[in-house]
Image 1 (tube, rainbow, N blue to C red):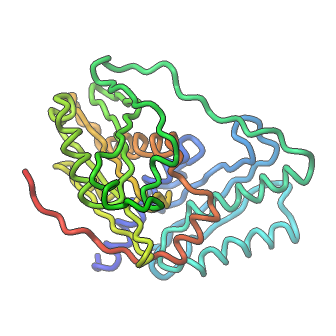
Image 2: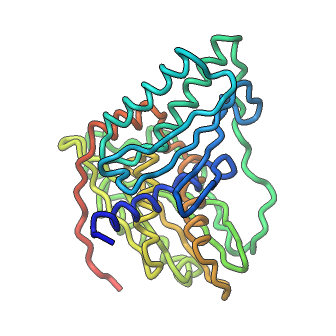
Length: 319
């Protein structure tokens, strides 16, 4: 396999894992070898009025030089409405050539369905999913969540005393653990605006004996540099090969900024195979959504179009 093909294959696998983590049961694998997938999209998950199935096949050249091959399946989608939606998807591809675009496509379709629902009749208030109440895990693995921090306290960028603010340890939130075959995964999140805060958060987490004893502590962060309109980002596998890169890719697709996510894994003695990456991404995605770090599709599209420059932070081994 050529080096270019290998790179495309890796990027496709990372995007597929991220999409599965983001959409869960809505995402369906039709043919894994042929890279054919289907996702069910609706205007409202709890009370759907309009639904469409997007089927995609990822060619070897995607995302580098070719778009996904797609099919829109809905009995009501005909004529000009189908043409308009197809044009919107192709416009997103043209604006983001070389980038992973499946997330943008899905959310664009969802946005069209929501608009259609609102035009047909006044749309009901969208119900927010409640957090899962029954969690099967050891009590000592659940770290107490910090009280909710006002948005103003998290906005380090607008304060005049920026140099003072970034010296402080950011608040750290802890997500709900996921347990599978005696392995447990838990995400931790903190707002960060500089690499020094990244180190402070890691140091604070390692003060907790339970976290320090984890088999792996995988992390990734993205910091937006307003003056240069670029992202400072990096990741760490901590022995779980490729897990950090997959986590960072998920954060890129969700277009989060000024945040760090650490996922701790306590190995239970049974190999999980690829499922471990699914759990790592699910943990990260859940806490990012809960703490309102995910953007709307339009904001994600604009950000991907304008802010493609990324500079990688230099890492030093501290172990």
